[in-house]
Image (cartoon, rainbow, N blue to C red; front, top):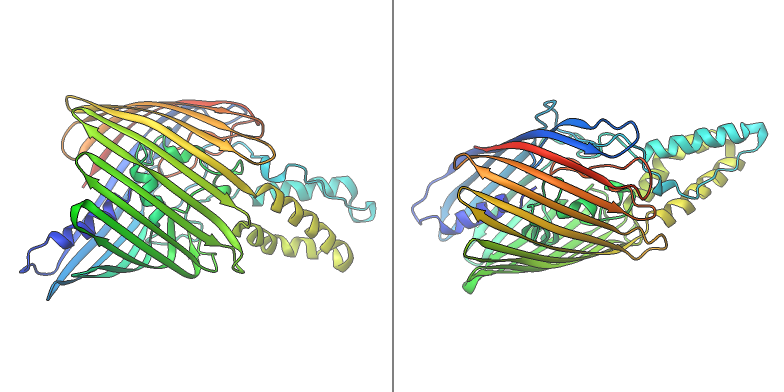
Length: 431
């Protein structure tokens, strides 16, 4: 999930000579490895995982010089899961998450099944709130990026599905580049896992303006129309960032704003961070504020489960649906801040990476989490590297964060408050 791919396309277009002709490039990343993890419960400890450091992908990008300083560009990028050849992914852990149904107790009269039916309903809701797969649920062919655009002398205009301005800054500030068990995004969000994610990575149905200004300044403005946002359910969304690159600095500030299906304020984030490179060191720092008062998943879950409640009739059905809605509005509420510090240190053909991430949950459960990561990445060639990562997540209260990877969320530990720890060893080839 690396925004540098798209940024590179734009930069290449600006840098192309005036006499350039149309060209199409096929590119990709093949990344996979082994993961040993302890999440408790019956969750398997040894796993073969696709896309640990970088999501495996196959992409097509192209540009055509149409004269006068204008260029037409496109980028199509498909997700590829090397472990099974599919384009969808689910939690790496098989454990059940409990936070989203905390306090939910259906009241079912004896005539309608009583406590046994209430328990069955609760289990059904838990399953619906933990879908597998949970990445690219619609099975889109070009889930990662699908964009066409026009580069002009005063900036680029892009249309399609693409990274949000907020995620671009978030990714650039991440020591582990949004991948591995130690990636910053692993514990950013609520205790419901990927369904309560605290950052909108991409947006469907988006219009974006980008410009690279003098002195290393860059700017991005994005507007998402109806059915935009990461899962294509926002009534509307928008985002903006301001970036600076030069003299060893790579800094940015960004704001994303999303809504639910009826336009109520949804996931809103503010991100500030970046890196500074000097000699063999590259130092990282980042801050990410996240708040979601009206998650799009609340209405989606209610609509999905509506037929189930309808089977209980016009008297009891709405009561059960109301109990669920009350619980979801409480448990999907997100108010948190995340901090990250870390570094790279180059040693020969490799680099040592280390970071500490803190998720400060400001909600009633105070389910904070702290993540520690240490890794080594060694370049076998310009295109191929091998890496090893050690990570540890300390959970509090309702927290069940489990270590994940670039292509898939970690899922959950067996019990709230239980730690997750593991080792990843993998290989990545870029072509």
